[in-house]
Structure formats: C-alpha cells, structure tokens
Length: 361
Ligand code: APR
Image (cartoon, rainbow, N blue to C red; front, top):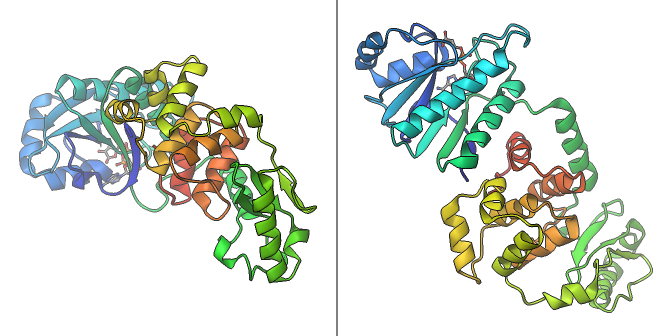
C-alpha cells in the first residue's frame, strides 16, 4: 500500500521523513509544529534558524534529532481564505515539493499531517482531497511509502453525501452472520449465500418466514440446486453472466485470473497495481507465483482497480479464498462502491477509514 491513512501522532512515526506544517519563520509554533519541535528537541530550532524561513508552498529539510524519523521536512501551507485565493494550488505544492525533497534525500517512507487543516482553517475534507490528489500524482511515477497521519477523533470528515450514502446502504443491507440464521427473527434482511457455481442468491424474506428448520432446509435446497439453476420458488439467483465462460476458467488461480483480466482490459501491470494502491514488490510476487494467495484487502483492491462488475469481483475475490457477504461492514462498503461504479481506491479507503474498517490494498 504506497498510500496509507492512519490515526496517530506524527512525532511517533518511524519513517525516513515526517512533514511539519510550519509557518514561514520556521521557528516553531502551535499544533503539529509545536509537537514536532518539542519532540525533536532544541537542536532543531538551531538548524531551522540557519534556513532563514520558508515561503508558503515551499519546503525545507532538517535532521530529525530526537524523533524516530531521520529527517523533518518543513512546509508552509496556505491560510484558508474561502478557497478563491489560490489556496488549493499552494497546498498542492506543499505536498509536491515535500515529496520531491524526500526523494532527493533518498527517503523511502514519508508521513504527512493534514497540512493547513488546523490553525490555518482549511476544511478537512478539502485538505484531504488535495493531499490525496498530490500524493497519487507523485506515486504514479515514483515508489515511496506515504502516510497521511490523522490526529484526534474528528480527524477525517467524509463528504456528507458520501457518508450518508454509505451509511444508509449499510443499514439496509447488513444482515446477521449465518450462525444466527436459524434463529433469525422473521424480519431479518435477505441472507446472501453462495451456491456451488459461486452464483449469489438471496433467500427472500418470505423464505425466512418459515420455521427455522424449514428455513435451513430451504437454504440447503437452494444451495444444492443453484448449480442446476432450479431454485426453490422464493430464492433469487443472479444468473452467472455466462456459465460456459465461468466453467472455462473454473480452476484458474487468483494470479492467473488477475493477469488475464489485466490483459483483457488492455492495462499494463503498473497501471493496474498503482490504481490498486499496491506496491510493485507485492505485485511481482503475485505475478511470479500462480498459487499466491493475497490478503482479502489486496484481492479487493485489484477487483476495484480492474473496475469489475459485482459478479466478477466476487469471483476474483473467491479465487483468493474469500467472499463478500452482508455480515460485515467492510464487505458492504465495497459492494456499495462497486454497485455505484465508484472505483477510486483512495475514496473507498476514506470511507473505510471513516467507518473504522481495515483499508483495502
Ligand atoms: N500528529 C499528527 N497530526 C497532528 C498533530 C500530531 N501530533 N498535532 C496536530 N495535528 C494535525 C491537526 O489536527 C491538523 O489536522 O495537523 C493538522 C495541521 O494542523 P496545524 O498543526 O494547526 O497546522 P496548520 O493548520 O497547517 O497551521 C499551521 O499552525 O502550528 C502552527 O506554526 C504553525 O503557524 C503555523 C500554523
């Protein structure tokens, strides 16, 4: 994962460089600037004095001193004045110049705070968008591990519309784990189950209304017959897009299916793994070992990068040994974005982060 969002205190990060949201004097201040100067010790101030200040949007580098990080990159973000005074361009150049300086100094890992989103008043969701845009642009042509360190509880505000869209989808889709299935109350939501052919079917509420034993029988019958496409009257099955097609690749491994789909989509390997927010080393492991089993977030990230429709996304994820169900928020959030045709791994990670879920890739 070349770009990772985490909650925490940037002064504790063991990376090659942390970035300081400084002011133009570079002589310390409040917020993260104050925290970094306190943690680094007074030698930092002596070195900063020699720099003679820094312009908004520019960046300077010093040693890390008592910090676990080797270097500190000081950059000065814009003060938010409503958004029509070039704030976005200046903030974008803070990230761009800091990353360039990190690369020049051989850094392989960098941690950013959300620059300008504190005392300088930049709205957090807009500040996050600029940060992600600038870091994504840099990672298109460079390999580096980049953290965005979010501080405090209201660290990240997801765009309100997106948040409510995901939240209501979770509320209407979530259903108790299968173990609760037999005793499920009559008004339980439809329970997704997988038939042998991987076809997903839902037992409608009417099927759930039967007595627990009957429900189990109904579920078993549906599972047993979905392969022959004869399903019990209350079950619905998403017919596989083409059974012959699916049968042809039935014993394909995850790695083989991934590489086939990259070719079919006309993508290069690099385009795919960068879009998936996967680093080159992990991709080359998957490419060289046809039996490689990635972690679930990695398998999901590739399904997103390939912009697969839901049935094919499930199929690719199943090849890695996992499934997407309605029994956990992570899976439901992934389904929300795929069914809404939103295939931006970074936007999905912001939503997963906002709902306290593991991130993909
Ligand atoms: N670790 C990570 N992030 C932190 C930490 C920390 N220890 N402390 C604060 N932050 C976060 C804030 O929550 C905010 O999201 O850093 C982000 C930037 O906030 P500020 O530090 O206030 O920086 P900024 O908004 O860019 O204002 C810069 O504030 O500290 C002064 O001298 C600095 O004058 C300059 C101005």
